[in-house]
Amino acid sequence: MSEALPAITLEPIGIVRSEIKEPIRRKSEDVVSEIIVDSSLTEALDNLEEFSHIIVLYWIHRSRRPAPKKVHPMGNPEHALMGVFATRSPDRPNPVGKSTARLLRRRDNVLTVQGLDAIDGTPVIDIKPYIPGYDSVDNARAPSWMVKQ
Amino acid sequence: MSEALPAITLEPIGIVRSEIKEPIRRKSEDVVSEIIVDSSLTEALDNLEEFSHIIVLYWIHRSRRPAPKKVHPMGNPEHALMGVFATRSPDRPNPVGKSTARLLRRRDNVLTVQGLDAIDGTPVIDIKPYIPGYDSVDNARAPSWMVKQ
Image (tube, rainbow over all chains, first blue to last red):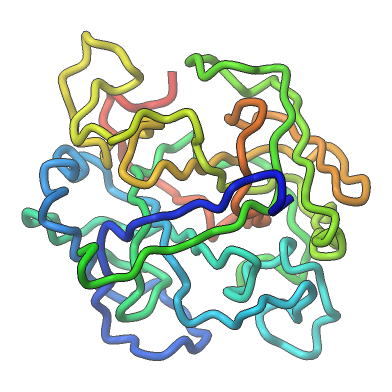
């Protein structure tokens, strides 16, 4: 595939500022952090405050490279090894994270968010509004080992 | 920001095969398409079939470059210009798409999916399981111009 398709180059649009400095597994629901967007893109954030939640795509810069093909879900060795694409492991072929966060405040190029699952210094790739009905699925099925704990 | 943070390089992990050949706005809910994953990553797909839905991140290779900072939502000029990060426009600083699709079938390195919002030839960046409760938000608020139509 790498022979057929050219590599993709992204320029980070911003960076995460958080009190969480190390990639430890934790509940991030209550963590309040900031996304500092490049000031050249401030006007591209206009209207975002009309949404209660945003989807953030980010580069998991502290992930393990090269990525394993199988991992223990949630890093728990009591779980059997699973294909990495069937997990949300940060160690994956293209370590791009996707997290949905509550948008508490926007001030110019600074977003204050709650529940962003990304540590301090994480490069941000994209910010999208969360759209009920488009981003959510009714009656989706997930195995018991993966259902939110 | 581009001075402070290095560029990010991604290698596509697969490609979309679809009857939709051109980037026209349309309902994709009923479209059935395939994701052909690089055969070196086949085992990384193991266990994915335990999930009913997957999240696909992909490179919107036909997007407009350079990206505008303001766009008319849904490409409809009757809508006022909005900051591009407040929309799901394909024309964005890093044109990475995020679509949730129903996983109909997995055969080795080929996934058959329904509702993937990506055209034929789209390079795939990542595949993640959709996790109810983690990926969905209860009572999220979106402005009326954006609510799914």
